[in-house]
Image 1: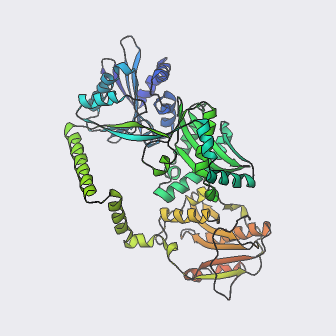
Image 2: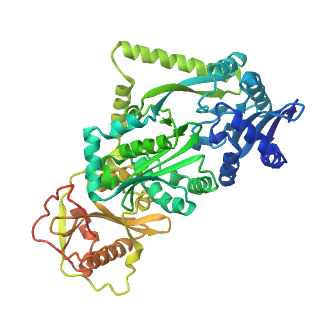
Image 3: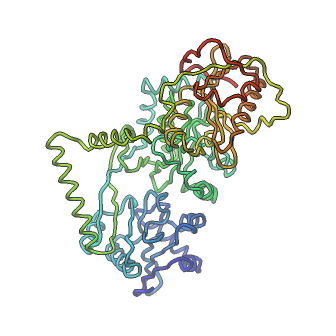
Length: 541
């Protein structure tokens, strides 16, 4: 479709235009000249993202050229069903367009009108817009087009002043944690640029990130999106080190924290922040932010973009704030009017609640309690219910024969995120919360996989004498043999590492289903199990 030199290019047409001689260079040139450029608006990101997501989204490009062929505007988009959004969808923190600032309002207005004519039933949502787009442009769009609604969001920023970062690291509590870590080994923060090392480390980072996100938000971004890992590796390894910054906090050769974020101009976005639950008492997330800030400052970057969203923990790092916008172009004026009316009603309701001293947080709390009182909610976290344990002692290590001990993994966090709820077990979020709590209190996780699913896991701690204490097991009903296979692997690792005494503590209600324990050499202890204190140093196996 053409309106003068304005073109809307859908699907294969978008890549035909991009592959034409000079068009990619023209896009790259406009990108470099644009005051609000961000990697998600560039041609490389557009190609890479659709390489992995073409099955879920169709590429959509809006381009404007002068009669002389000079590129004036590029709006990289994606379309699925009845929704249009920025290329990258929810993976692109910032979306929008590239154009010359002096003519931007007219050009973007023309682009939105053309899109509405081509796709009349589709809203266009750009959330958030790339930082630096002038507020005058947004105001002009809303004045010109009654279908357009914008919102303003506060963006926290950390100014990368070397002295300020060093001062933060010298604070008593932070310095104490750093010193305790350094007594365990050599602590270093380094940037990953080698493609092979990036691919090796990424799986560890993904396990840490998905586990914590699943426990907090019931969302495991990489598990839930099978294309995300491949895309990130592709972006990180296709010569885009100037666009993507990956830093790792290492204790000797052990990864304890990591950050992945896009770089734009003199700012680096905080996108993925991950850290090991084994080191939770040392606040590795906090140390990762400051060590990354120190590294970026040394590389000439001036700002760490903590990104909008209202997360309270970001405010603890922020030294300044600015504003970013979102824009939604609705299919009709009526649809936009309804949204505006709904926003006004919500605002009035909030003000009314403020006058009577009730906060939205309190309302959410009441609603949350109501939800938690449902039978399903009570059933999803059985581990929180106090149940008597029965203790078993290993009389002697069984003859393991040709058992494949290697199929049992130790502290492989990505295995835990592959848990799938069964009819009687906890929800995924409840399971991952329990897993995170156990790991942070010093437990080790032994896991057994069947394909892409967690088949069984066991939680282990060691007392000061080196006794291996197995505290709790899980086995999927879809793999009834997995518990025995897992236990064989655990005992094999214990035997190889010199563990001489083994205790197993499981809820009494599960004893009837554990006859196979006798075959492995376990016998019920005479005395009831005593509660084992959390936080015992966990040095084996």
